[in-house]
Amino acid sequence: MTSATIQHQQTGVWVQVGDVGRLFEFARYNNPTQCRVAAEQWFVDETNFQNPGRSLDACVNSAARLQLLVEQVADDFPLIGSDYKFVIDEARQCLAVLFGSMVVSETDHGFNVELVVNWLTKERRTVCTALPLEATAALLRRSPDSRSFSDMDGRPLHLSDTNREILAMVCRMD
Image (tube, rainbow, N blue to C red; front, side, top):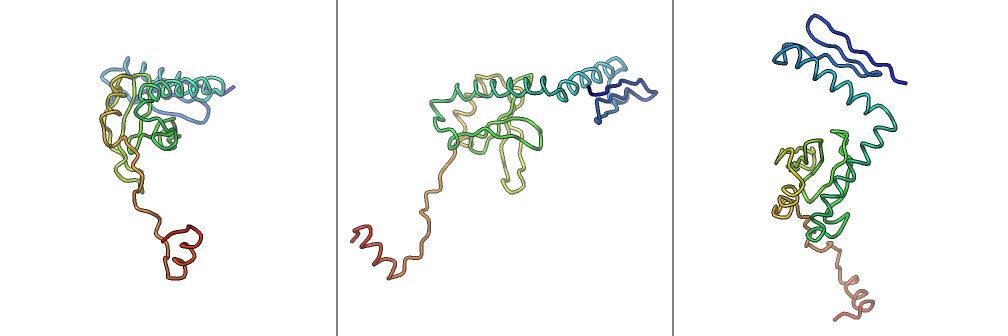
């Protein structure tokens, strides 16, 4: 069992679950009651996160909600792995679905949609947060950024005279 503590201090509330701890300072909240509520909510969330059984349930539930979104847009994005793919967002420690350049993750309040603006640095810009299922599906259907475009240029080959002659024989080309 993971050790857990909530300590009321002069400047705020210290919460620790296992090796992870956080100070909720009174100055960041409107009043001490809101600070204490935020600390207690974090305590519950972190306890569930660190519990293997509960965290697996959360993963399965997240995957199911994202699968509902995929089913909503299945006609527009029929090819898994090409039109869309499930990914683990390491930076945010969550499951997401990548539609073209759009990353969709889910929260308790709805779906978050981000646009990848730089693939090299994985920089993203928030498009919308806490969208309901239907609105997220409509956004994906209408956005050109949600489409995966294949490179239309053929693979460049070294087409020397010798290669052309061999290809002509092998492929029966003119």
